[in-house]
Image (cartoon, rainbow, N blue to C red; front, side):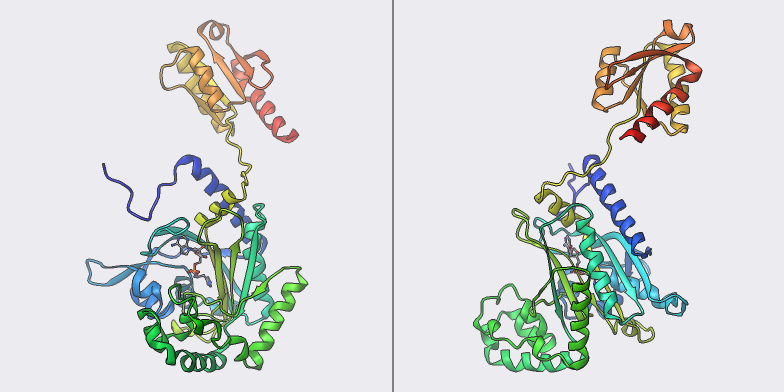
Length: 428
Ligand code: HAM
């Protein structure tokens, strides 16, 4: 037997229904906020992520699925969506479009070679948005509000929005120097990864799981003390807009994201539902002014976020939320005998063409077993087709909820059911 690869999973039909429901909700939300879908390839040139996500990040150093294709090119299964969206934005000159900012959303599988655990898989599906072309703090607040709405619109409540500002280049450089100065005397005591990070990307030391309890962590210089005036004011404005919208947040100056392109606003949404598991981050994002230039475009600000559907579904489970999708079929055709079967096949197609969700028996079952199948499928109506009825040009239709049964001429079944089924939906 061949099993599914480690860190991946099959999404079976029961689970798929939840996925479809959630995906549809998220698309509706995107439409409500006026974001438009972009679809980019699942693999890209490796260089895109090296430059976009950053050479020193864990993602690029340890987690990419990189391969050489038959033409000798180095390609990588995308570990995230932002770099690809920005590549496409530049390549398709979207910055030239009259309507700005460019507001995009995407869905799709991402791949990271991580140690699998609950909420962390090697293939996962992200839903994300990117707003490119505006450096207005109000759009930062829009993206944060959108991110929260993804969960709230599904009924989730145990949510915590954590925000931080990483500042602009000047603020970051000053903070970076302060971090190097602070941690260098402790260098030998830090883990090997942090020793490397200290030189290349000292901000990431703050995010280290191994050294998290080192005393130097607590006294580390906070970015808040290094924000220059522009960055400070920008952050204050983002907070004001959030307050205007009645959105609660917590500022955590140690919130560091795992990707290099961020500056100014950075945020994560966490679940504080009991039993959610060790990984509590539901989604994350932030501003990335500079990424468009890094990937060959004109100076363009940008901000976005992404969530994984896997973690969203875990949060729904943790909060015991049952999604209200309709699994029932409208009609099941129970036919006995060859003649009836021939009529049934014809009737079924015609019902389906008229928008009536219909199924029938393909297992050569007896009448009683066919009724059982109709029950299992939660059929609202069962059409009984026996040879006697058909000889008289009619069928029996049973309402499975009330138990009522009536005879209908064969040629009127569709209009009868259409009225019954659609009338039923109207009353619900
Ligand atoms: P990220 O924080 O690396 O950011 O990932 C965003 C979200 O993807 C996470 O919060 C989590 O929900 C999900 N995720 C990441 N890795 C896994 C995994 N191994 N298994 C399951 N879910 C996972 C980004 O990817 C940025 N591109 C977000 C962004 C968009 N920033 C600006 N625009």
